[in-house]
Image 1 (cartoon, rainbow, N blue to C red):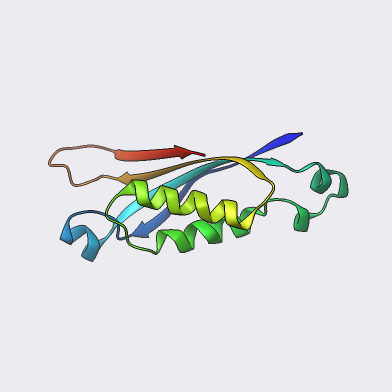
Image 2: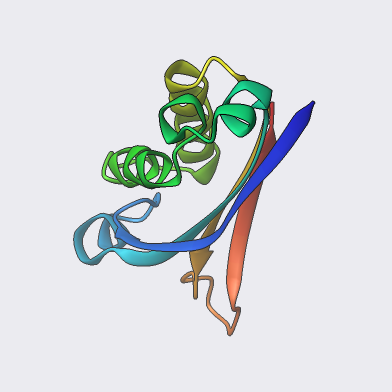
Length: 117
């Protein structure tokens, strides 16, 4: 069976953006994930070592967010690829990276890029 694990609105300060000022002062970002995985063995054994560990997922995302990128598409791809490398049981990953209050010259809550792979 396929289980879906969801982590919503993990918040980070990071330095992604195509403008020089964004790379210096940074911005606030959120990351949300939906992870589909085959986890029957973990569920039956009640064993965290056999599942997709939320703490380790958070750490992976946190490390990915530390690497500066010009565009959010690069950030979200790095996160998805890192999660697939860490968890062979994954069958589908949907990740959304949002930049909060982006400097677009007007009021906007956030801009987001989503990748499902």
